[in-house]
Image 1 (cartoon, helix red, strand yellow):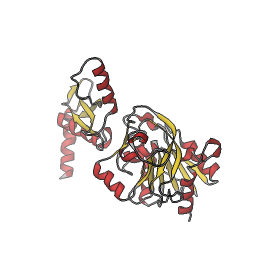
Image 2 (image 1 turned 30 degrees about the horizontal axis):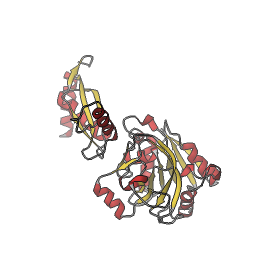
Image 3 (image 1 turned 60 degrees about the vertical axis):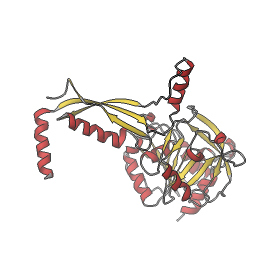
Image 4 (image 1 turned 180 degrees about the vertical axis):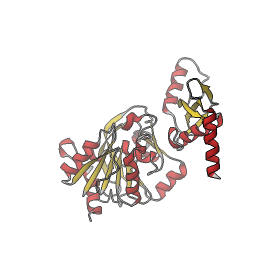
Length: 230
Length: 106
């Protein structure tokens, strides 16, 4: 499987994503420059973390107009997988690939921690190697991660099982005490309507190497490998 | 019809293009939590401004745009807001009346 990792000016998670694909999974990966219009036959597109365009105006607002993004949107419309992590999630929301928006953390602080993340949907192409209710340990590193959307949008996400991950306590319970950035319904990750675009604030690509802690992000990549392999 | 309108506009632009400054206010939509505003409310109350009920923090932009009328300048900046400057999921925007700036082509 070939992973295409988009590099915007200000991306900083692109190397982590590349490393996860090549070193941890033994798969192929290529960097995709934001000014290019060629996805280089990538099977999975990763929109990585970082601060694209310095987060000017709003996080992700300017990156969405990069030439590569029209190709990424077309890739998603074909039903092919797009994994949007952290700043990538913000870009995907701004681009209309996912509903809602990501706003300043309720604490107003940048938060860089490894946290319990509960798997809500364990049937998607990104998550079927996990089980529903499984509590992962994944790093987050963001200042603008508070997921917001209109109540009817949130209801439709919940009803359709499109909430992929939630911030939780270590025992998997959900509550405001563990809702680290104040997201509506503790939402940490969502799927698009057809299930081929996943946006998430936690960093699975930074949790693939036992050297750096529990490699709980591997399950996400293994799910993709098992599900998308032609 | 479209061609006629385009032609008509083109003639007007050649006739009297000016540089308009359009002020834009962008604020969080009602109901959207604004943690920065909440922090400022707390600070103001600490300073003794007990009557403060709410503060909303947004963004103020001035966009200088060449147009053949104030109406055209406003319409142009409104489209910019819809496409990039504001995110309708979380923000409302309001435009103020354009003012003609020196330095535009005339």
